[in-house]
Length: 326
Image (cartoon, rainbow, N blue to C red; front, side, top):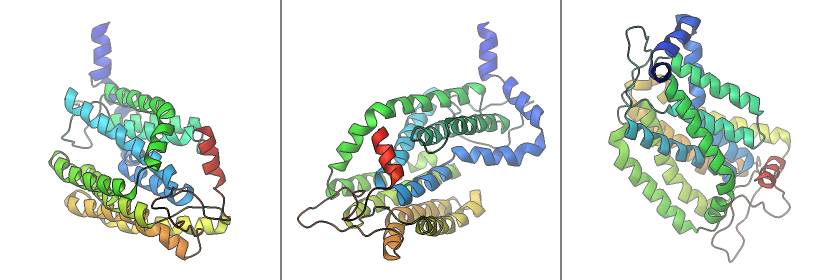
């Protein structure tokens, strides 16, 4: 019984079953589904949350996914489970880091799980996306069944901890000064440089480190100089705001994505610039163009809740619902 269970969880059977069931023609489909658990989706969703719902909404998503990713990486290094290898397995990708747990499954579970908890997407849709990412990792031949189940379990644990802990964490960060965020940004950039050798053999590692470096530069400057709130604006202006923001984001990310593994440094630079665009440049552009309300810094106060609306504006409905639910 135990031997059968171990063979099911860490054997080639589930992988070959999925590969034989769908066949080689499904490779582009599953490779695309796997992107729903990649850093690209976190960057896009985090940027959209910032532009449409405010700073806290974006930071809560990105920070939770980042925390889950750090725990996932530590578990990978601790367990050191090798990638699947068997003559009958077709390995569509070659990845040089340990296999357990599946990082894509962790990211998908936390990202889409949070969106469903906030009422932004149906829970059934989130479950379908996570299941699709899990199956895609099996199809690509780079994870055992135990890896994707372990990734889903870790993601669910992070989601369970988010509910009781997030209000206190948000309150603590909202009381920090600009100097604190300047130190935080500096530490982030230094940490990125320190851990760079660990990720240098992976394109996704370069992309993640680039995004973190860009965020480390942009966050303290944003907290000090940018006072952005999406406020209440006509639906048409919201649409223009979203399209303009995404156009800049895609324009910065596209060169790195097209070149891919052949130029990982370009991928890191493009993700750093994308983070700076999303956090530091796009919000004041929206305000200058009248796509978001102006939010003035009150006199006599060094720091202020960046999501607080200016006089005559109210918080968007989605953000009020989120705050009342948390």
